[in-house]
Length: 160
Image (cartoon, rainbow, N blue to C red; front, side, top):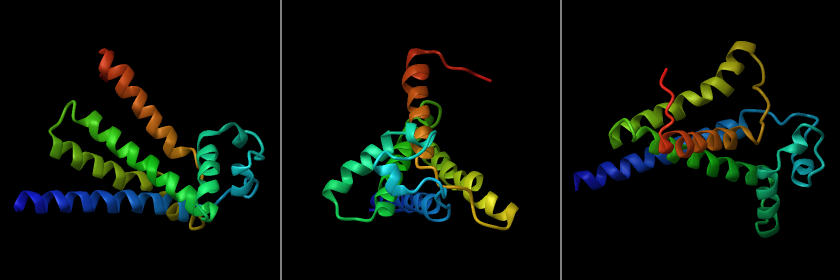
């Protein structure tokens, strides 16, 4: 009973952290005025934003099936990629730590990540936050994924 309750609590905390970060990253940052989300989805964004194709492709695909606003679709994709980043980080940390320690460190990463992007900038400039770039979280995920599968699994671990 206690282990089940602990497992439900940890899953709830993880879900709240993932949704909280996705909300903070999408809602508390502003969309760059030259890059509107409908132009991004229709692949009409100016360079260099027109080169980032993965997230607009996924949102464009989802827009055909889901009658939802574009902001909510970008939020959904952001939540999916931050969840993938969490699980990749959890897996990476399990190479060195136990499951509970790696879960705690992954939570700490999710708590500190908004400080580097949203909260710190809003506090120091006393104004609006940085711009919402839809490719930030997928870039973090794929960088960590490449590190896990290329460096760690092949034995090329770089120690400082």
